[in-house]
Amino acid sequence: MVYPLQPRLLLWGLVAGGIGIAVFWSSPMAGAAFGVLFCMTGMTWRAEEPPILAFCLAYQWCFIATGYIYQQVTGTYPGLERVAHIELAVGLSLLGLLTLATGIRFGIHLLHQQEIAAPKQISGAHTAYPIPRLFLWVIGLYSLNWFVRLTPMTLYFDAAQLIYNLLALRTIFFAMLVLIVLQTQVGYGYAVAAFIYVLLPQLASMMSHFKESFFVLSIALLGQWRPWLPTATDPRHARLLCTMIAFGSALLAMAIFWEGGIKPIWRPAMMHSQVTGAPLQKLSAFIDVVHTASQRLDVRQATKDLASRMASSAGYFSHVLARVPAIIDYEHGRLTLRAFTHVVQPRFFFPHKPNLGGDSWLVRKYAGIHVADEKQGTSVGLSYMAQFYIDFGLPGMFIPLFLYGLLIGLIYQSLRFAAPSPLFFQSIVMVIFLQHFMSYEGEIAKLLGGLIQTWLFFLLFLHVCAPWLHRHLLAHSAVPVNAPA
Image (tube, rainbow, N blue to C red; front, side, top):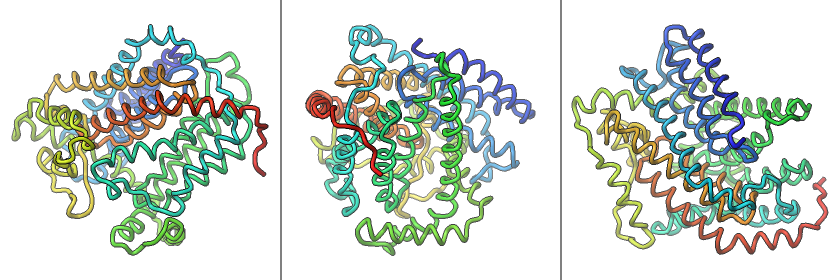
């Protein structure tokens, strides 16, 4: 069965929805939110593959549901004083997420016959790539991060997306290493050493780019949990489930600590050039900030800060519903047309193409909220759900959402056919979709343009470079696997 968790999670979703309604008896929407989470996870969790699509949709679900659930618990919406149409905003966003998941399923199904005709891609067995060789690739490709701050926008603005994709290639090797260690259950020392080596320089960044490494590890761990198999009662599955719960709890604690403790100190210091030098020097300053933040941390306020960060897009959507079309008319596709125009003119070939700039203007114009913009060194986004509503209203917004999901499903399958091995495919889709789905508030033009350009870049990589890398790694597959001490 390709989607083995679908029947089970549909049932769990109904149970979770009932529990949610029982806990938040005044709002069936809270129960519906939990039901949607389980339903779309079952719709997109494919057997013998890391659940990258399910993970990304669940991550976006957090931006939709967090603020509303927080409001049901505390009585106030985090970060905004007024959210008049929040139930409608959450309901439309949840339905939009289900529509997106349906489009993804349909896109994958359209290429199902080609999947059957390509047995090398549908094999679930791990490829015998040598763990020590992969470890050396990871160390070599990430070594530059320890000495130089890599910022594509300042290196070469017109080719920034290309540089981002070149840097993302490194994550493929890290993902492959983690996946094969978990699949073979050997070489854990290599995986731990690589994770630390990749993570530490990322901590010196102004933004929370380090979360990508944690997400790669999370998805790889989830991919090993297979409760649909006859061996699901094996003690290893129970230990794995406990590990994932502990790891998820640790990630939540780190997110609270970052948002409410480290970020308010670290980011202003970076923006005002109070922390300078090479990544190693910044890492030392970061450790000092962690020590300071741990002494000042107010857990309750930090939790509220994290909830505010996660809840803003749904809150802004509620304001959009109050203003469009009552005050501002629908755009009738103008935002989406702008996105397509931006996609068909890559900056590398059209260097004089206007810069899209920040996204704060969308919140200011359509939500009527005066938020910080590029002049204050930041950008506040409006969710793509709200942008499709602004463009097409109801029920028109769900048509582009389905087509968006369809495109994602087609991209997912096309990468499967181009990859020289299942491990290459699994690693590449983890990199591409983590990069794409981490921005729920992104502007349509940036999201669509980034997805298309990244897909084409990785397709070219799979056709030109991946076959040689596949043969190179297989040629060293006889290297013994001995984890470092």
